[in-house]
Image (cartoon, rainbow, N blue to C red; front, side, top):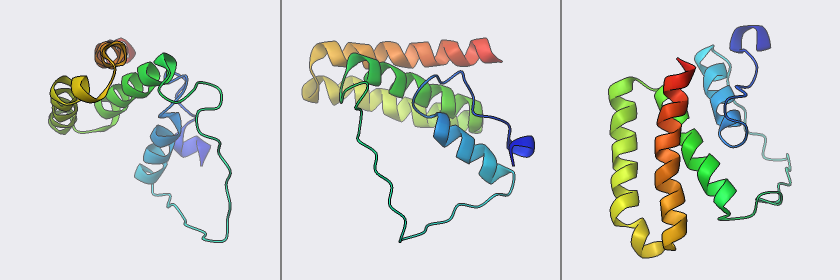
Length: 118
């Protein structure tokens, strides 16, 4: 499988690396299986904290990188534009101002990360 799919993309560092790996594996013809008897325990954000500056930055930076890397470019731009518009007009009402700024900077950082990786 790794010969066809490749290893996990270290560019992500954290967040979205697993999504990217599975996305590439599916494109290579591998399938995902749901096994209802299986149990997975994952304590959310134990190392980074929920809504920490770190988790906001890397989650949204890597979302942008993932979309630009893997989607058809017009679709990626469309998805990201919708997300940015939501972030510009809805999140300032819902999120503390400092968290909103981190997210907006993360979009730009994700764009630059993609440009650098080409």
